[in-house]
Length: 89
Picture (cartoon, rainbow, N blue to C red):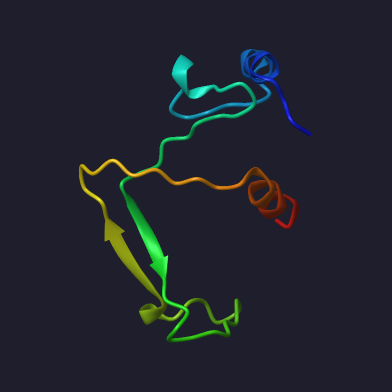
């Protein structure tokens, strides 16, 4: 389902969809929401380990922390992958 900007604004106003911190007007597009992420994120190194056991947790060497500092970075996540991730939770 694709929602228009009017639908997104209506659902936010009703309280059914909440963003913390609150969105600025420019973050709502014609059929999208522009999310701002932290400049810090984790990178997964699949060259060291390709099979993971969720019961054992992630090995220490599997993730490294990256900090982009004050750099401006754009990350585009296709909508279908976002909804697939939610569906599989």
